[in-house]
Length: 399
Ligand code: SF4
Ligand code: SF4
Image (cartoon, rainbow, N blue to C red; front, side, top):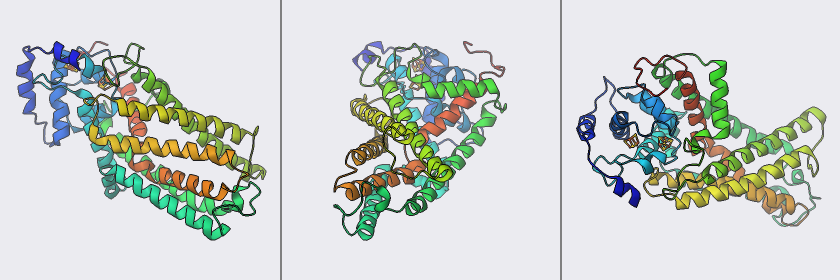
């Protein structure tokens, strides 16, 4: 951050900052984090040095004022790549104190709370470390006690390497299906509320095929973690790194492969009557092992990068949420792989109970933790792909 200090200098933009501090936008009262984003974006809108870094700045230049919906949209468009912090001559300790990634992160978590469904459960985002810990403790307790009750022991028994000899298939479906469907419903209704608020603020135009294709590509490639130039984003310091993008990719695709493994296994079971356990080289096992390894490497990388993150980049108070989610994913993949390797051993009931407890905690907290960032950010990228195809009524942007 020493380089940021060297870049500090005063300019006529100071006057703009003072004006922006008194921001009031129509009849919509902004929260303190939202007002701070609006203040900083007024400065950025005059400066525009970071215009090529990401989607946030071109979207910003389409606006002269920033209402609640604009701020929610822009906050979820930001990927916390840090490029605009490390490039900014007005970053702390400059009196303008421009720190866009931090201000955006504070609003982002507020949007998760505001749009959560059911609304009362939005509070779970605020003490997320505790939420995840309690969910994990409950998940482990439930499955360890169930294994003991059904198998008579956590160590051994007549199992012949078959998980369903510990927990019958229908019992697992009865426990996991409602939790998973609730998570999908809660996330879907939450992001629908977000979409409805930001759509009018982003021209209101409907989603076209090209816009959907571009947004899908941006999400799948994590385009905005490339820093706008392909060299990567920032993490610990001013150096560019592609490590965050790669760790995200390993995590995301690992998660999707594990999900595909479960989906294929479900089709095998119900459509073809081919019951588990499946072993190599069956498709569910190939997908599961590849996904588990990818998830393990990705989450280990993300955790390390999170520990090294520059203290000014992002919102430090959200670290329990970030690290808790990464840890749950890591242990889900670790215990899943351990379970496969130890499937013929006396440790099978214990390992299976621990794995299922971790997975249950993960599923139960999906709508009220860091997982939400992928859903909300994808929706914001889709609105951006729509908005950029509409005429810019101000005509002040670069594109
Ligand atoms: S973050 Fe700083 S350098 Fe970038 S546009 Fe805003 S004020 Fe300018
Ligand atoms: S942190 Fe990165 S993604 Fe967020 S506004 Fe700055 S440059 Fe854009």
